[in-house]
Length: 106
Image (cartoon, rainbow, N blue to C red; front, top):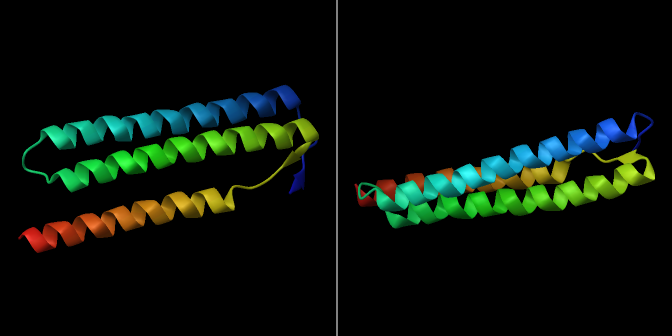
């Protein structure tokens, strides 16, 4: 945890912008999953997999937003190491799963 000595309003607005960007990304992934589910050339598993990633992104963003808000009110900031590793792990697992599914089908 790092002591935050900057502008409180600026930091809260930056936290909100980051949250909204991650929310937009999560919703875009869920929208893309609906497109994949409608597309017959792709298996349903891949569509649901993208939807799950979108939901994970939304949950992670929400938890991180409120955690940052609490820390900023106390005058601290905590780098997001665990969240980045979690999202990265889910994305890599999804890519590997999609390759395995496509490899088995061909």
